[in-house]
Length: 218
Image (cartoon, rainbow, N blue to C red; front, side, top):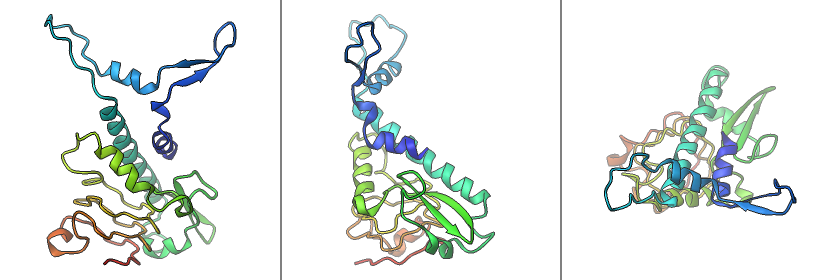
């Protein structure tokens, strides 16, 4: 599932696909996959109206796909790690995060391995490696919000349990009703968020139970 996020993040589905599958083996370009999705979302029944039905915007389908793949990656990584005892069977998750490696080392680009005494858990690292840029996840979120279909800005309302955001810049994102239990937020920056990070009016809707916090909040 982390491959799906990388696939979406690189915009592979928005690019015309080169191929040489023809008798002359000439280079050709097939329509982007998202164009196929637009057609699949179109109504099949012709109502007989003189007005043709408007097709879905590519931006809308791109945002739905990104939102869905992100949720799937969060759930799958966490529930597998949970079944393998990441939360409390061996040690508290906030202690285990101290044994986290670098995202993409020994795993895929948007994953991170936690290696403790020969036991390895692979968790979801949505921001990737901070060496490649601390703000990747913020751009990811704004791309989803650009379509304007979400009732609340991304990532509001998402279960992001056990995710790795160490060192990430998470500014100007809407964190309302986000589940960040058991997450690693070491050295993450939440400066100038739309909803202030720690006031009492927000804490009741922002779950930080058992997460690893070494955050500078200004």
